Amino acid sequence: MVAGSERPGFRRRLRQALTLRPGAARPGRTTIALASAAACCLGLVTVVELRTPDEGSAAADSSAASTELLRRAEQEHASRGLARTPSAPSATPSPSASTAPAPTPAAEKTAPGKSTPTKKPTPRKPVDPAPVAGLTVAQMNNAKKIVRTGRAMGVPRRALVIAVATAMQESNLYNLASGALPESQNHPNQGLGWDHDSVGLFQQRASMGWGTVAQLMDPAYATRKFLTTLLAVPGWQQMRLTDAAQAVQVSGFPEAYAQHESRATVIVAAIVAPAT
Image (cartoon, rainbow, N blue to C red; front, side):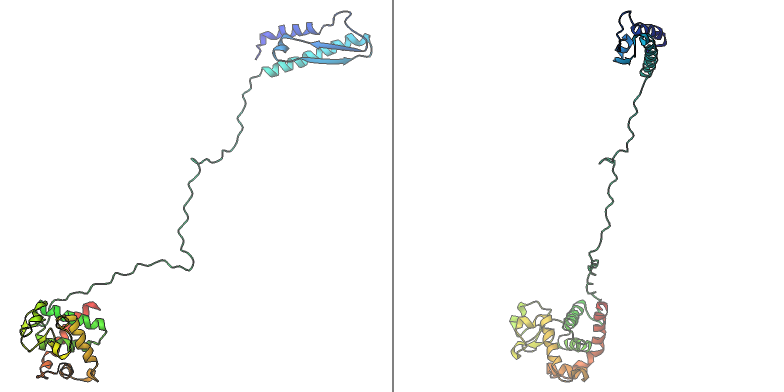
């Protein structure tokens, strides 16, 4: 910016530059070149071509041109002297990776035609009821083996009661080996019996085709053999308990099984109830 005190000197130099020297004018066309120190500093070179009809009007045209050039030069000088601060272009910044909002995760969808898998309930373990009907723990455990084996076979409850009552009469619900059959004593047992070669909960005999000694000493196997034979008896469901048991066991005391019916019913009920 040029201070106000420098303008008089600027004007004076500009007038001197615009003054035509005598004899410098030529008829037809006059070319005036303006070269000012101030204009040079601003990089301004102005060439004005004035067309004059004759030399007599050259002085008047030159004076008018000088006045016009002076006015324009002063305006240009004042305009360029103003301080200008370029303004930054306003532009909406595009979202960058750091400023862009995080994408919202899409909700999990179940594929069409597929249902949400449901957790299968954990199977409930059988509850071991306390001994009932005056049984010991060992007797109650053997009764559970009979009842649970029969339920796995899908037999009616009546068959379970007959089986428990029969074992109560035959072995007092203990898994007995035979004192007359040493081989039977090599298997887990809860005492000895002395009725020929009869072994196990139902005192079945290997010599009569019920199975091997090892099989008959297994409570589950012995129970399956008893129940399979009972279910093969025609009309066993309508028989008295003692008659149905006798049809399987062929005992010398056919009426002995009847005495255990009520207790056997209580025992079966106690074992079956928690499992249902």
